[in-house]
Image (cartoon, rainbow, N blue to C red; front, side):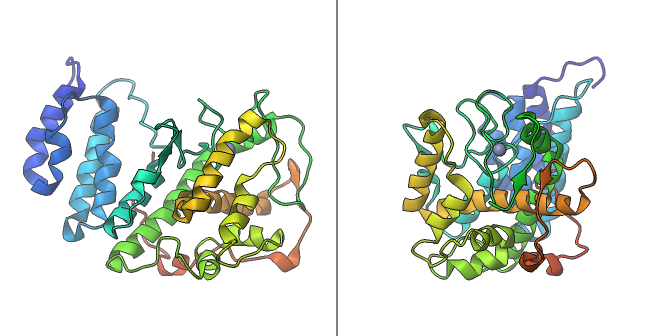
Length: 328
Ligand SMILES: [Zn+2]
């Protein structure tokens, strides 16, 4: 490729020439239907092929390898390499795919307000709705829109500036993404290996046992805050614990209210939020043990609420090689 400008259409034609002959025909459509190639569109083939690889049986490895190769073509056909495309909402796409596999109609519920509001949109550092036209939420912005939200009344906070949350979010971003992917990967594999029978999605009844098993740290928030866990109120409790700040202006609160109302009507929509919150709380919980003299938060020792952070898949997948759902 030296001395040649690699355009997206050249990359696409090479992908078609070299990869399509070895790729099963049912995966050709996204490459053939492209009217105008762009790096972003090509980049999406990577997570697309990797998530398809989970249900492709013996062909899984091939799909994964082609996906990774396409990612490399998108990134390394220029010097310096292109910034990797950030698939901030990959977990949403995988969630929607899972719903598709078991014929749960959910995709049409995603957008409100004539397509302007995405109920699955989230801050890149946590699970909260981001500030309008931003990729971060009120907690993680260091601007005048910053607001401190405590998850637990026992967290007495010693914060020297609005930058504390921002810096903390930034510092733990990589660990957060990895943890999220780890949970997602394990549950996705279990789901496919069970022939789609594994109860991956939020059940309509007996939600609390499901939550305790799969999202133990989120469950612990409900226990700590004495929130009710009966089926008819548990969604309200979860939204109170995770997504109901009390100190915001009307404008900043709007996305929270909109998302919460919609989730209450369609509880299944809370799934990505629970996954993100569990990943965030897992990182937070691991960091507690590592805090040294430079700590910013002071959490009183609480020996009777120590709960294992392992979910039921941790043991089963111990030592298993991680699949690259979102390792950018
Ligand atoms: Zn955030």
